[in-house]
Image (cartoon, rainbow, N blue to C red; front, side, top):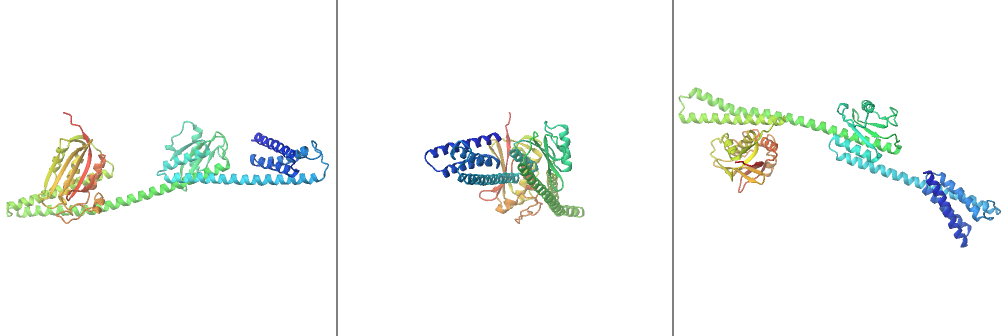
Length: 489
């Protein structure tokens, strides 16, 4: 930098002198020649660093003008006393212009630094706002610091026992990082702690804990005050984002706990109601048979037996749904995926559906022999629930159709009815836990609203999604897709 400043000073002085010779030959006055030297001083002030070179060029400019253009020329002697005043004014003007130019330059540089700082911090802030996890926040922070410092950056996330130490860091570096984590203070190069290390260890410390340690490979090159200030601000932004994310996670956990408590309360409430009704019916019918079996006609006895059977089947289905819901909520649902003949699965499911004496007609429509990959037990439960739902919410003598058709590499399975259908609002809520639709049909109010949410969860576990839409000309269609399997003969 010093050599370049000297070069600029010499070039400016030489150029000013050359131009002054041309102007002098053309008959211009000394005042014009002095302005050329002042312009040269301004160039030096703009192109060099610090005030010193501007002052030096001012002195050299006065001496050069005196040597080449003041009588007697080619000497530093001055015969005319007026030139002394000229030299003083020239020197003062040059110094003033040099100082003012340097101040403007410094002011512009400071504004540029502030603008750069603001831009970097804005980028960091936007980047951190886009992050959705603690790991992503720290990764984006490391990226911003690497961009600022142009150095290799490492991040030791979480607790020390979970750190993945880079190969470059030695045993003593790990000890320094551990000290930084435990004390929540910076360590390493250019700090007061273990300053002989080539690495700088920066603690990402919140109000209550240290989230991570950021390691900067400085290669023992000092980081400027300006850059260090930006580093501190970016880490502060990172801590703010991490604490915000932690708070949001705690809020989500609290909301989930509250939701689980509400679901549990709703479940207990629903169980107490929905179990009481069929159990009371079974108990009452059994008591009636015990007391009056011989007095009751055969037709009436058969009707009571049928009621007991229907209620017990409904209870079995309810218990199966409850067990499946519990497994799903606990994350214990495991699929045993096998290729199954779709039509055979549908026929098996219909054997377990309780039609409650409504006399609905059920039709199976399969274009061909189709095989799909599924967990047989869970898929039976889906079909039973969907058909049971159609039976529950359609009037007597309604038609229910179960259709299976091939569509590319998928088998589309649907359960259709020609009942009253669902409103747009009901379609949005129909897969919500404990939501039931009351359409005033038979025992449509019986049930806790577990069937469809359970079906959706099972279908999602199969890599698909249960959809609901309107049937033509009326009614409802529930459909989903399964992976098609080739039948090997």
